Every structure is written in structure tokens, then in C-alpha cells.
Amino acid sequence: QRLRQLGETDQLVDVIGYQGPSSGIFANTALGSTGDGGSIFIDPRQVSIRDGAKISVNSDGTGNAGNISLIADILNLDNGSEISAQTASSLGGNINLQLGELLLLRRGSQISTNAGTAQKGGDGGNININSKFIVAVPQENSDITANAFLGAGGRVQINTQSILGIQSRPQLTDFSDITASSSFGLAGEVNIYTPDSEPLQNNLIELPENIIDANALIANSCIAKRNNPSASIFLISGNGGLPERPGDADLSPYPTGKIRSVSTSELVGTNSKRNANKKISAPIVEAQGIYRLVNGELVLSRECS
Image 1: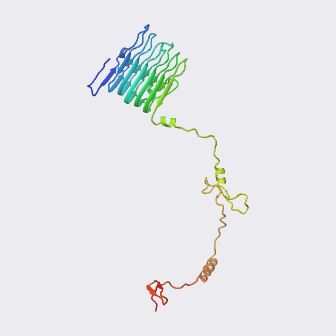
Image 2 (image 1 turned 120 degrees about the horizontal axis):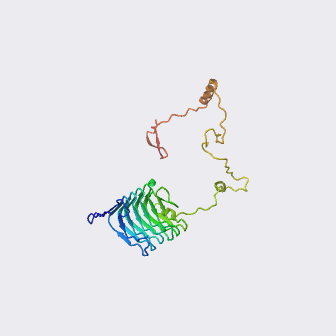
Image 3 (image 1 turned 180 degrees about the vertical axis):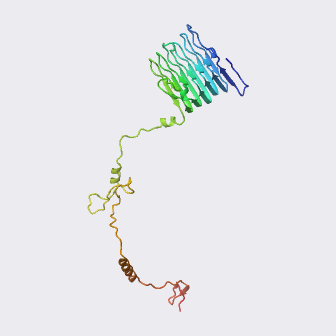
């Protein structure tokens, strides 16, 4: 076991496990005892628990587990490390983690308030985690659990901006899980709140089941008098625009007629008729000034000779 503190402005608690089960910070009760586990409070800037080390307030007797409170910026659990408030046959303890930046779970690490580890009664404890980011590796089987054997599962409540690599599941798997299950009792609760999903879930509005018929709305929008035979008619002949698929029929309601070639003589005759019907108009002369007529009116015209 090794604890290290570096100054008042850069505190680091580094708990390193060695061979054997006794590396860590403990407030446990022994097998056959009747008292409750103790409480542990840790308040540095950074906590690192690694290589099988533990912080625990377990109860191996008939008493309840204790409580763990940890306030830090970063909490790192690595290589089989554990924070636990477990019991053999009674009520699991509570774990409260208030982290400003990051909770990192690596290589089979655990946060647990399980109850009934001796396959006896007791409800699972509660786990409350507030952290900006929670990160684990899915394949490394790092878990957050508040399970029970005969009693009810506990409650896991997580408030975070982003949670990656670990997810809530009804039972433990070989992946990284968050569970509050019970082998023979009632399941507990897992509540994960993120700023993206919580407002959306709380403000969803159930849409009505009745479906609006768009065709009926279009037909009813015509204001022509239906009972007046001389009134105008609005006819819906179908969809317009381009065909939906290549090869579909032409959607145009107007016939295009047949296309045929035109002979040279027909073109000459047509042009001759057009030239014969043309009328030669008087040339346009630009105005050159303003002139007064004999009746006193002013006109804009060319110069009169």
C-alpha cells in the first residue's frame, strides 16, 4: 500500500496494489462480526487506484456496509482495482463520487455496493456518480454494480455530460456493464442523466393516432359551388412533374402530336406567305426638339420643314 500527497495545490492519492489482498484503504468488518462497516472520505485533486488495490467499507459479518465519499477532479481505476461497499448478508453501503472531470475504468476494475455475497439476504446499496466524463473500454469488463442475491437490487444514479464504453444492462456480461439486478429479488434502478437526452425525454409529446387524409384536404380546398353546374371545375388528374422512375408513362395531360419531316417546297411556300403578309411601316425618326403648334400646344418631334 502506498499513499502519496503532493502539496496543497496538486494533491494526488496513489493507491497501488501488490501481491496479496491487503493493499488499499479499508474500513471493513470481519467474518462473524455484528457491527457495521466504517466510512471513508477522500478529498484530493486526483485519485489513482491500480494493480488490484481497493478502497472498501465491506461487511463480512451481519452488519451493514459503510459509506465511501470521494471528491476529486479525476478518478482512475486500473487493472482489477475496486471501490466497494459490499455485504455478505445485509444491506449494501453507499458510494458517492463527485468528480469534476473524469472517471476512468480500465482492465476489470469495479465500483460495487453488492449485497448477499455469501448468497444470503440484504438489499444492494446506492451508487451516486457526478462526473463530466465517464470512460471505459467495452471489452475490458469493468463494472458498476449495485446487485443483490435474495434482496432487492440497489440504485445507480449517474449525472454526466458523456458516458463512453460502458452501458446499463439487466445482467452482468463479459463487457463493461452498469447493473442493479437481483438473483432472486426485485431488480433495482439504473438512472443515467446526460444533458442531451434528459430534456428530450422529458419533453416528448405523444402524437395523435388519427391520420390526416391529404387528398381530402386538397379536394375540400376548392371554393367552387359543387351544386352549380355552370360553375368552374377544379379537376385533380394525378401527380405532375417528372416520372417517379425511368420508363414510367408520360405524365403530361396534353398530346404532343406526331413528328414528321417537312419538304423544301413547303418551307418555301410558308416563307413566301409570311413575306407577303408583312406590312412596311413608316421609318422611325428620332425627336430633335420641342415645338409649339399653332394652337399653343408643345410637342416633342423632329424639325419641321
